[in-house]
Image (cartoon, rainbow, N blue to C red; front, side, top):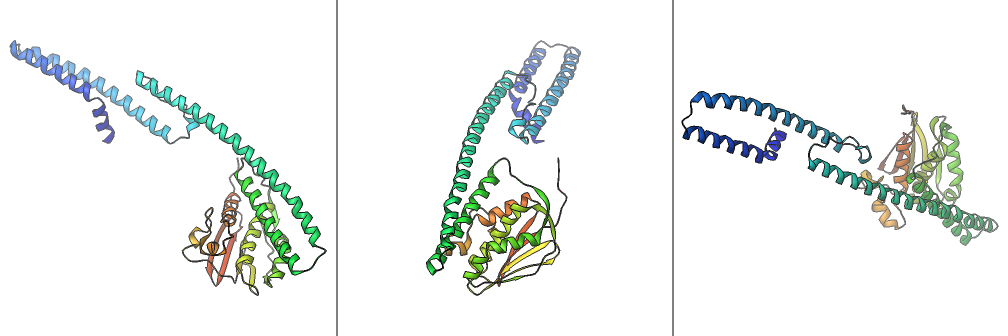
Length: 328
């Protein structure tokens, strides 16, 4: 009904002109006292012809409207089947659309080139910064003092931030080096524990770990990054003498729980948003709001599920059970 009313509004001038002509002919017939047969018969013929023409025009307008509605739902680069150019207006509009598409493509190409250059620059920078960090670590290995331990902890955090930058850049690039294979979860967890062993010792944290004889269909490097990010948050927000528990009560669902400060109920629904630090992050003033955001993106890409619960501390769950993957 809405389309029909719009159609009538667009054809308003033509309809009014037709009615005016009818009025002129009617006045002429009345003034000259022509017989009714001479008036009715031509009127019926004209009405039939006009109805056919109007029906054909309405059908074309409806088809054109339907085509444009379908095109509206498509991506811009797929708009190649515009309606046939009937009027000069149609041709002008399609020329404008084609011109705008060319401009958009040119801007997209320029942006893509700039973004690729930026990613390449920061990727090289992130790899280069690892060299002096490794050198400083070797230097500190021969010392054991409160100062050296503090510097070592700071270097550990810098390494984490560098890895986070690399992960962020890789996820934003067009190609990501996923290698999906069966991975021993127990092996990955122990690798992550070794990485954080110094942090556990310096904060006197108790690690309670139940072995998880589970094989996950995933990417080793990216899943390890997710586990380490969750452990990093657990270590950061758990006070000295606290406890971190890693277990798998349900086969395929890994739980990493700490006895830390927990997450405020109003922050819990938003912790996986980019840049969101919440109450704890604002108090800490060192949180980037990227760690859990990256974990969520990686899990989505790997067809895993991640969520968190908070009460006495925080519990983060990873659902690593295999799902049907769509392959092309």
